[in-house]
Every structure is written in structure tokens, then in C-alpha cells.
Image 1: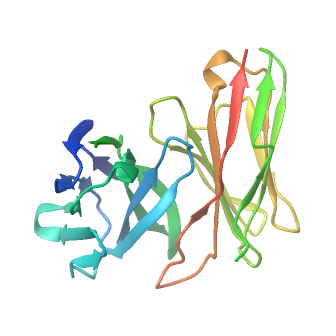
Image 2: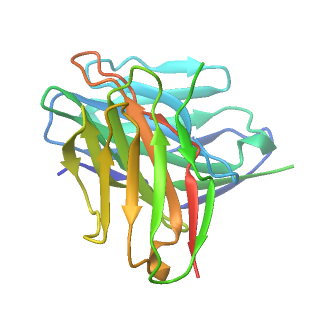
Length: 117
Length: 115
């Protein structure tokens, strides 16, 4: 069975600090997708990134960067120069394949990030 | 661009009542997923449909049922509501297909409160 572990539950930083959110996953599939979602207080799930199991290239998007390492089954997310608007719950998620297509998402427990002015 | 539509956005019910949540996927998307997120919890997969057939099933209570219609919209029917059913219910849609897989696009959610 697939599993996503986000060991950090709450992180509090001061604005402009860098912060890394950890994600470790378990799966028996060789083909899978990893995701990060942001959930602000308003409740919607905001898609941040999708990475497939064959693409270990790190990715940078503005202040966000992701480090995918299959050797350690980790998909960590770093926010550089954090801002108050980054305060939210962040979920890491895993999707395996079902009948050759995308299957359900399994989410981690989420990390509550608070960025103080 | 059109997004996933969920209605209603908020719903208040009494214990033992029934509720129906609706989901309208992105046009041309043929797969719908339902997730339940309790307070302070992560979203949990309930059920999914592809081309009007159930494609996968998670921890959905027997009191709940769902279906996908010919226009691909989906409805989640919840009966004998319990206090513990109070949650945010997300619907997501995607295109069923091969590699590279289509991502799931989430709707804004329906917040159900059971009193």
C-alpha cells in the first residue's frame, strides 16, 4: 500500500527565512506521481507541483523549489525568503497507476506553516 | 479556463438527515474522484468513477453512495448523517489515459456541517 509521511506537523518561521518541508513516501509501483498542494485558511487545495517517478530533476519556480530523491524516497519542498502569504497547510501526495491510468491520491498528514512578520 | 464546480459550497444538516453533493468536472474530463477532509485531517479518498463506472473505492461508509451520470457530473449521496460526517468534501476530475497521466484538478469543496 502507498503511504506518505510528513513528519513535521507545524513549522513557524519569521518572514524572509528559508523553510524546507519534508516528505517521504512508500510505494511498490515503479510508475507513480508525487504532488505538493497548498491549503490556505479558505480551504481550497492549490496545486503546486507534480513530478513523475522517472524525472528526478529538481525544479525551481520563483521562491519555490523541490528536491526529488528516489534513493531516499523523498520529495522535499523549500520556500526561499518566506512571506506571510505562504502561511498555510502544505500536503504532499502520491498517486500510483491503476489500469495504466492515474489513480487516487494518498495524502500526507500535512504541515502547518506559519510565517510571522 | 473552466474549473471543477461543486455545489453547494456550504451545507448544514441535522443528524439523521440526507445530503446530496454535486460535482461538475472540467469539460471533456471523464474521471471523477471524491475526497473527504475532516477538521485538521488530510483528504481521504472515498470513491472514483470513470465513464460512469466505479473505478476505485476507498473508505466510503455504506451510508454513502455515489454515481456518475451521462454528462459526467457526479453526485455523492449521504444518508443518516452523523456528527462525524462534518467535513470538507472535495471533488476532483481528470482525463483517464496513459502516460503522461493527467493530473487531478480539484474543485473548491463543499463544507458540510452536521448539527
